[in-house]
Length: 314
Image (cartoon, rainbow, N blue to C red; front, side, top):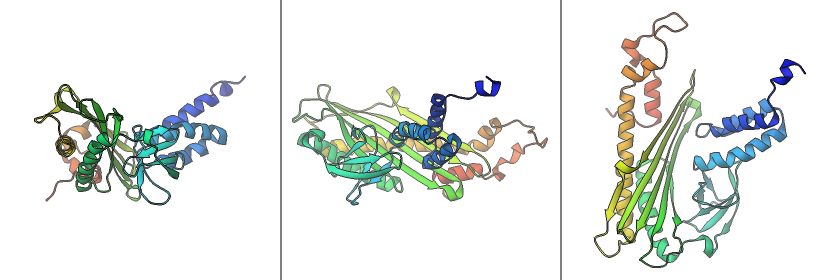
């Protein structure tokens, strides 16, 4: 056996490599990566295997949104809306979408059955929160989408029991013609604890950006609201109404996301003096000194800020 044959990856290794590239594709770019992987592998069977495993994970992690075939609504593909193999619940329309992950389309839909939906009592809280969050998202994120799901206690029928809702928010800004794509994703766990008489909110926020004009620069920032950022809403009455709880929870989400966006903007304002200096050697391979004293002449910082909507207003 020649040395060249010994260094060739096995089919299993090829599949894992292809999956890695697919799963790490920036927002809105997995189809481009898939086309390249198909050309590199030159094996339809290997590509189909890799795509079948990678696309569902990618779609759920990026929380993509798909229209129903009859345009009666849309469904967010997330781990919280998944109720079966390739089946995803849209709680607003009480429909279940059957999803083709590789082509990223909804092939058909069916009505959700009673076992797949929360009780009327839980639905009051879910619906009220959905209304408030939808209003917030429409005001803050252009083309943003959101959904609210019950992940624990959907069979609770009256006060006195704990239950948990999850709010998912996703917004993308795709501009491949300008060599820049970006995304915002946030997940908020809202726990209603009856015995303690409080509502706990925990959030995970993730921002991604890809700038690829004459280069390849990616941002992948993640922030978790845990111990130091835990918020509780005390119940002043015996039971908190759905409308009051929805307003309080949305106020918390708005505050936390605004704080995080402000922190990102502060970080970007320091790019010329700090971050850029850590990106490369002072004397590059061109043997030409990089003008650290005047990095503002380069458009990368401005373009990234613009793509995320963080540019300063004049």
